Image (cartoon, rainbow, N blue to C red; front, side, top):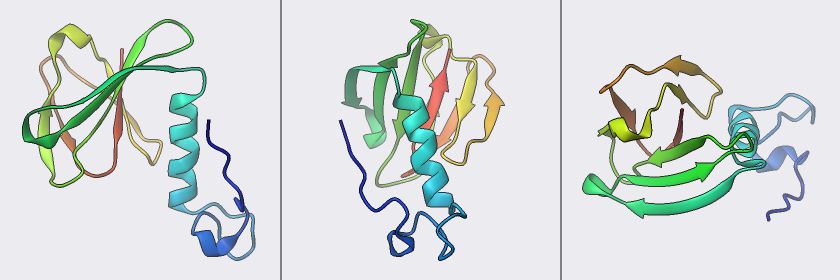
Amino acid sequence: RLYWYAWDNFLMGLVEPDGRTVKPAGRAYQNVQDWMTGAQVRECQSGPGAVWTCQVTRDAGNDAWIVWSPNTKSEFAVPSAWRVHRVRTLAGETRALEARQRVAVGAMPVLLEQ
């Protein structure tokens, strides 16, 4: 559990000085909260090329994977066994994912959904 204090403090970089306009970092924080609310983390591991994956099970019982590469940008080959159909970014963008498609990953995580 995480409690975030000073959400409305514009010096934190999440909102503009008006205290109401959310910055991209604030949207990213909200999107990760949406990804994780009601989810259970099953396992996290580092794979080839230092790409990290965390498997999470969502409320509806479907699995999703959070994937990132903290040190370098790379192309991640999504395992077909994951049956992933969608990619979500920290900015909230969503796109369809075709079978055997690779996903560009970097320091900012993406969510791969069934």
